[in-house]
Image (cartoon, rainbow, N blue to C red; front, side, top):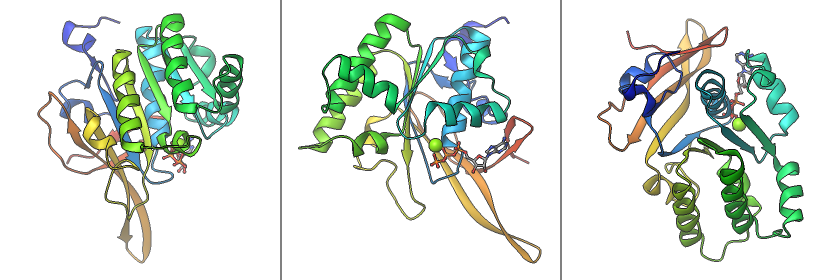
Length: 241
Ligand SMILES: Nc1ncnc2c1ncn2[C@@H]1O[C@H](COP(=O)(O)OP(=O)(O)OP(=O)(O)O)[C@@H](O)[C@H]1O
Ligand SMILES: [Mg+2]
C-alpha cells in the first residue's frame, strides 16, 4: 500500500467518514483520550486502530488491557474479524502479564512508577509507534495517589515523551461531565474522542444508538458534532447525511 507524506503523518481512526473530518486522521504523536460509557466501543475502536496500523502499515503497537484479560479481548476482537495471528507487531499485555513483568523488576506496588518505567522499556525493545492504555480508571484503581493531579500530569508528560501516538481509554458514566476521572486528563490530552449512547424512539420501541464526536484535536480544524456510529460486518462508519 502506498502511503503519501500527509498520510504518513496521520493515524486514521479507520471509521469511514470520521477520518475525512480529521483531514486524514489523528496527528502522529498525539495523546488522545477516548471517553465513553460501558459498551460504547472504546476498546474496539482503539484496538482496531492499532490492528490496522500493525497489519497494513507495519507499525509496532502495544495494547495494555488493564481490566479485560488478553484472552477475552482477543476473542472479542476476533469476532469483529480481527485475527490476532495476523498482527505480529501488535502486542497485547493484560494485567497478569504486566504484574509478572513488574514483579520481575520489583516495581510492585508502585504501579504508576512501574508502568512508566515499563513503557520506556517496551519502547526501547518493541519500538511502540502506538500505545493504548485500557483503561486509565483501571490503572488508577491500582495506584495509591497522594497528589493525583500532579502525578497524572507527570505520567502523561512521560507518556508524551515516548513519542508514540497514545490512546488513553477513560470510562465515563453518562451523567459525568468531565472526560477523565480527575478532571485534568482532558486538558493534558491533545485530543478527545467522545462516545455516547443515547436513547431513541423507533416507532413503539425505545432503542439506543451510539454516537461519536471529536471534541478536541490539537492542530486540526474539525467540527464538534455527534455523529451516529454504525457497525456492520466489521465496517465502522459515521452517518453524515
Ligand atoms: N462481533 C461484533 N459485532 C458487532 N458488535 C459487537 C460484536 N461484539 C461485540 N459487539 C458490541 O460491542 C460492545 C462492546 O464493545 P467494547 O468492549 O469495545 O466497549 P467498551 O466501551 O470498551 O466497553 P467497556 O467500558 O465495558 O470496556 C458490545 O456491548 C456489543 O454491543
Ligand atoms: Mg473496554
